[in-house]
Image 1 (tube, rainbow, N blue to C red):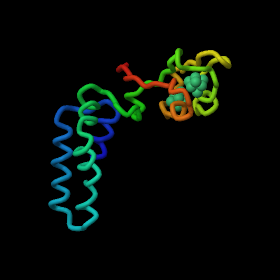
Image 2: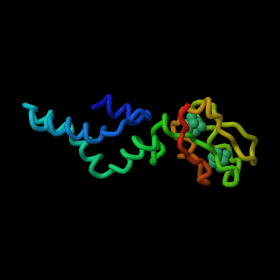
Image 3: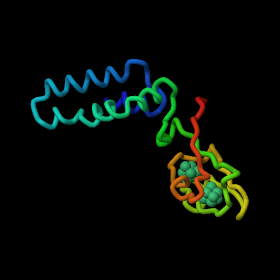
Length: 135
Ligand code: SF4
Ligand code: SF4
């Protein structure tokens, strides 16, 4: 299950993965001898149940709607919304953001590790996410 989920999060999901996960989960529930084994698949089944459209987006379109899977997400700064306050560059752990005070800042995609810290720090909603195109 972990390998399948990792593949989905990293853009290698394949058609049928959701159904395969469900089969594995139900098999674990049916054959596990202890309660831990029977309940371990619950997080996977629950997320499929409530967020199936997100699984499908990852698998079919290689998109992460929540913008949290680094391999599927690219962070950018909307120059029109950016005030140049510099908060994002101060919190960036990869030193990926540059820009002068009071001018629009820019993210270097080659340095960005898609941690999301800049989006959390920006009070002007200027940090946006977009689909990362396959190399
Ligand atoms: S925190 Fe937001 S407004 Fe401030 S420089 Fe960064 S992107 Fe621009
Ligand atoms: S997502 Fe993280 S690494 Fe990328 S620019 Fe923002 S703070 Fe820096």
